[in-house]
Amino acid sequence: MSLQGKRIVVGLGGGIAAFKAVQLVRELMRRGAEVRVVMTEAATHFVGPITFAGLTGKPAVTNLWAENYAGEVHVELGEWADAVVIAPATMNLMARATSGQANDVVLATLACARGDVFFAPSMHHRMWAHPATQSNIRTLTDRGAVVLGPVTGALANGEIGEGRMMEPDDIADEVESHLAHADDLSGSRVLITAGPTHEDLDPVRFLGNRSSGRMGYAIASQALRRGAEVTIVSGPVHLPVPSGAEVVRVRSAQEMHAAVMSRFDRCDVLIMAAAVADYRPEQREAQKIKKGGSLKLELVRNPDILADVGAKRSQRPSVLVGFALETENLEQAARDKLERKAADLIVANEASAALGGDTNRATLVEAASTTPLPEMTKRALANQILDRVRTLLTNPSQRPRREAKQEAPN
Ligand code: C5P
Image 1: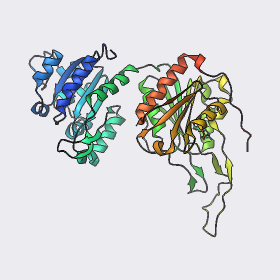
Image 2 (image 1 turned 135 degrees about the horizontal axis):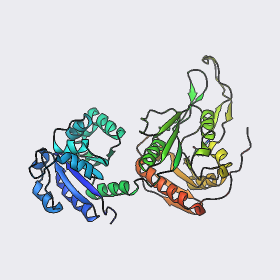
Image 3 (image 1 turned 90 degrees about the horizontal axis):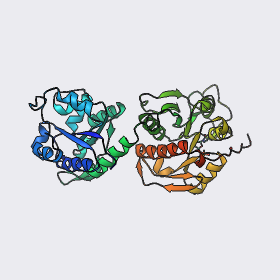
């Protein structure tokens, strides 16, 4: 059982999905975890503490003044737990957690949590879509919490919408995979490129693409969580920097090339998630281009960063990962890239699934295998990629010994 030896606090907010927390507690225990339960006063209106006491063999704590605890129960539980899982996480509970309130046992335990923190939101779809909730979610995520769901489905009043709590089995899966990887990349230096590049035409205009940078930033934050030392070479994006990462900001492919080439020999893993422009305007006009008749642009090739690193791969890094975004013949194109750029792994995504959103569908292409993955969050995909990186790092025999073919310069 893969949660064997893990200590988990399940915290309940007052929502109708509280009854599913019973199943969650059972599932976590079935996988080997030791579980304690804390509840807000509101949660006790939906499900009784005696149920949890019966399941866990320990009293469920419903207030900070619990008489059967001698010390400070929130401090003890916060210190004890490898993970605190709030399910259901109501709009109100997350708002209070965001503002740092600690006036009940669930919030006070969260405030003292030493381990990982998870929220499984559950609420009406309009409460979920409310700007206050969305802004609170961003803040909690930026502080390192993991938000699981909600999913789209039947809500308490029979409406269908986004706001239904993730199913207990799925929550347990996520918590398990999260705790399983703790620190498995510690000691590794990971360099990640992310986002688009902007190729200037004049002082105000550029050629760009629709990459949001989310995939690269998700890999960065998961690598950090798994103990790696992380540097992001980032094109222009609007994303918060994962705490603990070093960020080198660049605009153009040439700047990204210089930033990567001056750093790659100090890293163990290079993950090129950036959507680097293949072409740039031959000339950057010093003044804003005036409108006139038709305008012809002359474009020249940018350096291929991944191929240039691939050509020097004997100097490090040990593991080289590229991305392939295509609108057709995805797998063949990925396999060509693997060969041409001397990469160990190409993450192939369809353009329709990858750009901008929070989810992605990808196929992992390696010299000896092709692994199609189902659609999943960029965070989950980041962990799948890092699982492969970890295997390649520890098994050099799975990495090719070849070098990239240098393309003819333009
Ligand atoms: O050849 P293509 O652009 O499709 O290859 C995609 C992969 O190569 C991505 O990992 C991307 O970051 C990288 N790349 C690069 N330099 C370029 C173009 C793409 O490193 N100029």
